[in-house]
Amino acid sequence: MTINLDNLDEEQKKKIVNLNNFQQSFEFITTQKLQTERTLSETVLAIEELEKIDLNDTVYKAIGGILVKSEKTKLLDEKKSMKVTLTMRLKT
Image 1 (cartoon, rainbow, N blue to C red):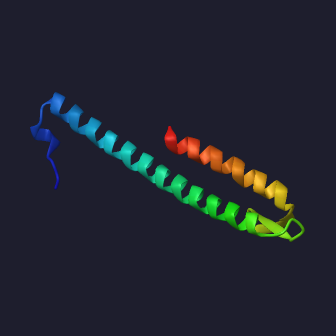
Image 2: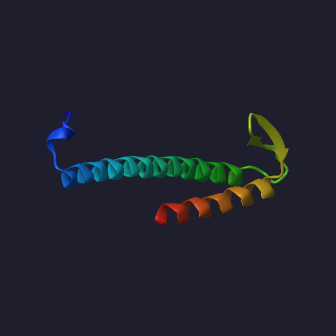
C-alpha cells in the first residue's frame, strides 16, 4: 500500500515519517534481541559441554576463522562472563 504524501498536510507527513522511523527502530531492536538470544543460547550450550569434559581434555576456541588451543578453565570463565553480559543486555 502506497500513500501519496502530496495529498497530506505537513502534520500528517511528519506523523508518517515518525511512524516509519519508529518501525525501523523497532525492527532493528528486534533483530538485535534475536541475535543476542541466539548467542546466549549458544553460550549456555558451550558452558554445559565444557562442564562435561575432564580438566585435562584438549579444548579449542574460535578466533576469527581459526581454532586456537585453550585451557578448559579459561574458556569456561570466558563463556560464563559472556553469559552474564548477554543476560544483562537482554534485561535492559
